[in-house]
Length: 60
Image 1 (cartoon, rainbow, N blue to C red):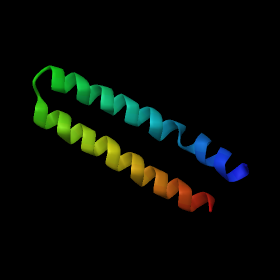
Image 2 (image 1 turned 45 degrees about the vertical axis):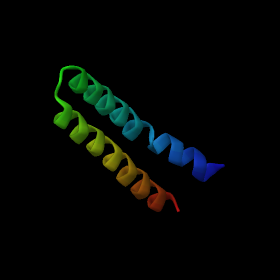
Image 3 (image 1 turned 120 degrees about the horizontal axis):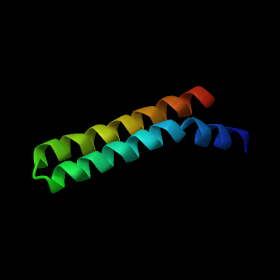
């Protein structure tokens, strides 16, 4: 339970940032900035997975 709880706590900030960036990408897409939206989606997903790998390696 300890490792899973630590992982969840440490991933709160990256999850919040990812949600914010995805909402920004949705806003850009609605305004017609499709290339910027795709770039924001990629940055959001990539940074979330990088943060998850780093946090996972730090607690194991």
